Picture 1 (tube, rainbow, N blue to C red):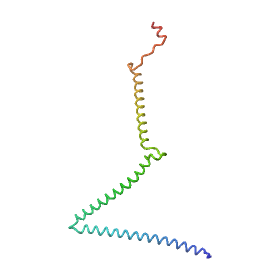
Picture 2: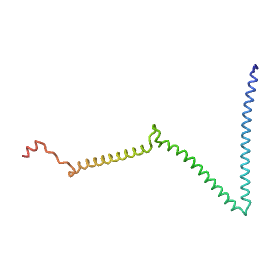
Picture 3: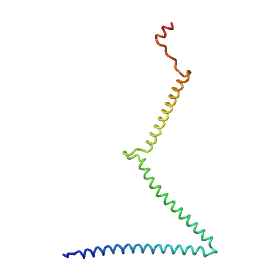
Picture 4: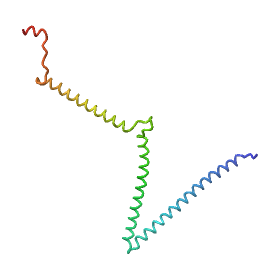
Amino acid sequence: MKIFNENDNNDKEKLKYYAEKAKEAINLNINYHKQKEIYKNYIREIKGILFDKDKIQDNFRKIIKQLKENKDKLQQEYEKIKKFKYDIYYKNCTDELEMGRPLLNQLKSDKFTLEYTLSQKDNLLKVLSINMKNSLYFSLFRQPKRDTFLDLKEGD
């Protein structure tokens, strides 16, 4: 069994530290080389488009066509992903086999009936309050006063 002293442990830590630094530098270097290749391709394409004066319109048309195709392709992929994701959520909400989950259609119909009855009651309250105000100001809307027994004796 080998026993390490402090210098050996310190050297191992230094080696690990420098190995991590070297790995990061290598990864960055690889990334920079890939970016350099991409930019070289861009520059080559742009030079081919700009310096070929006879075919410049054809080149732009080709590029526009490629961009439209790429856009349509990406749009279709996005729609597939979006449709798949929201279809799953919709099925989970409306699945009648799951007994623990509320049914979306039932909730919608309950909400509709509650809103309808609430609006009916609100309208009834508004009409009654308007009638009360009118009965205070106008005699036409007042109820006839009831005669008491004493008034009947005096009237006779």
